[in-house]
Amino acid sequence: MRRKSKEVVLPAVRPLLAAAPEPGDRSTDVFSKAKRSEVMSHIRGRDTGIELQVRHWLHSQGFGYRLCVRTLPGTPDIVMTKYRTVIFVNGCFWHGHGCHLSSSPKTNPEFWRNKIEANRLRDERSELALTDLGWRVVTIWECDLESRPDLVFRRLKARLRAARLRMAKRHAIRRDAACTFQPGR
Image (cartoon, rainbow, N blue to C red; front, side, top):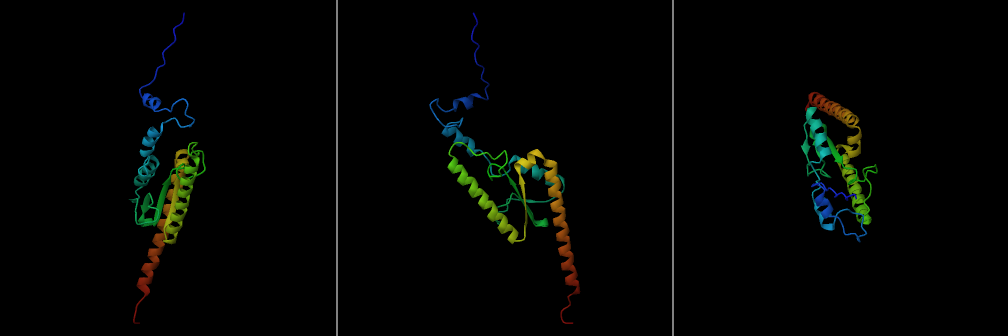
């Protein structure tokens, strides 16, 4: 006679199983309401993995930057004042990118649809306000950074190089204008 084998539950999985909904619960979420609330409260808005990856690359290339400048519209993730460029590092889900990483949740879909649409509208308003103020806006998407980081960084470097040339040209014009202008003659 064969004995039934006992199920082995790894210690890391036990808390997840304890938080699972009751069998009669119709929601598709694997967590209880309290556990889902706890999980969501740990999601960070800054210093995310993808943002740290971009910052590490910028630092390794010798670029200087500031973080989350609140005086600018939209509080950009990375601000490069020398190049008059701001960088938004967007998570595909939170900003409604429409790629494979931005699937819509099954629970409370109306709430999530409204929240993500509000995020998208806020992003558009912020980008428009920044361009009106003379800033160049670069948006880096999570899916692009995960699938083709070399291409993302190559394009970013080209954008920053072009910005540097524009700034140098602008300063040269100002310098020439200051040298040629002689009041009173």
